[in-house]
Length: 440
Image (cartoon, rainbow, N blue to C red; front, side, top):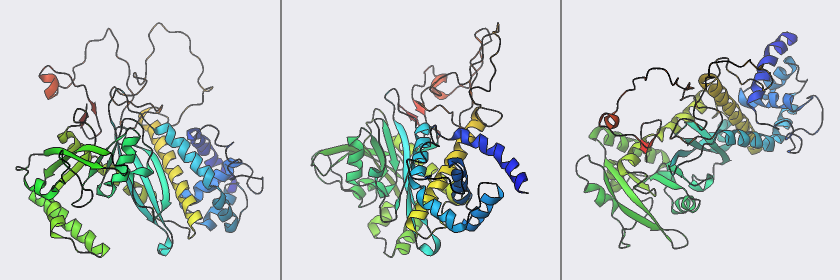
């Protein structure tokens, strides 16, 4: 039975390691994960053991049994636990290297919207609690940053790396002056939801804006927009805009019900001003109006829900919310292994769904050269940087965008569906997000 399991799992493992970053074996020893050959012969065996325990969710005992059944080595559950204590820096390097391959970049002056959020991961009997900080690229719908801290670390925009052109989309928990100022200092922009008392804003005359009074002045269900600014810790003004929209009566009632339940769960009563403000969607953005209009900002914020779905997938499908370890170090390493497991799945789905029909990347020396042909070669993914306007610079295409074949110059022109802009004789110049919002 042991030989049968080995023969079954070895080919799949050989395909899986093709998705790992270059040099991952060599990093195991200097990062302290693999110091000597004892029971486990090489870093590959160690990584397989880590993914058994952290990725698939096997207990320490079951992981030890699976290691023996697959020929990795005869281990006890204590030996598995000791190895999980040492693999943290190595797993951090693996996760970081895989994320760097998935990061896209803003091009042509366009903004790159990224949804950011945090989620609490709880261990057995709430003895250990971690906070997972997560960033999702909304243009390519792929995770591009992961951070793990203890649950005492609050949600803040300062936990995320920011480059020029980034537009961080976040909920009301991130509406903090220090975090917004840090994003601006690094060349990024923000789009955050505002609560009734989350951040004091001022008008052009440096007078405090009565946010609720302004929301009441909105006419009907038309979006409103106005200038707003605040001072950072150094006394400099951070300028931006308030964008707001009145919710329908049904949506407002649902929003108030959710706020009351949240207040009751956290042990405080919801004030009448906060309850009234729940009937509006109020956003603050530092992006210029030329790059993001008020209507676009409101539409783009709806796409932030994608990160909530990403958390749901991690917790419901991959059991990322079920920490099996009671110590902080073991729990953190277990969650890192789970994130590595998820990134391998994402990379596999990208390759299988958008590029290769066989579902895995070919090694460079496995394709034999072909004789020259009279016909021009077909070019998969005609644009080397991804679909025009998206500005992606990673080498693997997204599963949301199929591979394209370069059109034949002698073929008849294909009919394309018309849009209101093209039907009127205009052209579309902005990039479209996955939710349909055009960014100038």
